[in-house]
Length: 91
Image 1 (tube, rainbow, N blue to C red):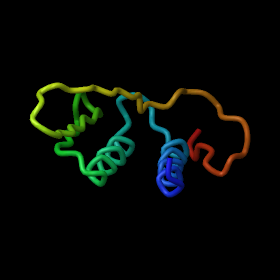
Image 2 (cartoon, helix red, strand yellow; image 1 turned 30 degrees about the vertical axis):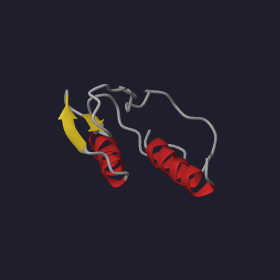
Image 3 (cartoon, one colour; image 1 turned 60 degrees about the horizontal axis):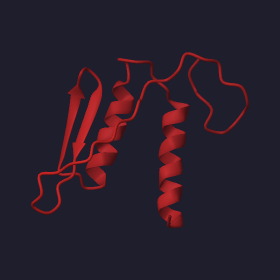
């Protein structure tokens, strides 16, 4: 992976890790994900799916085939040990 891309992805992960939201309360997280999907050029981004879900669609060529990817955005209700710079800013 190219270094600038890896750095960008790490920064996104650190931002999300430092700003966790619990299930069905991930409004800022969903907005962040939707904005990043638009920035990278997805053809369609739909927010509010099932409450706080985000669906991004990427179309290429003429095929109707698709691949779906799923990820959880909700934080776990656990205390985080350690002192990493991207440690959660919320209890």
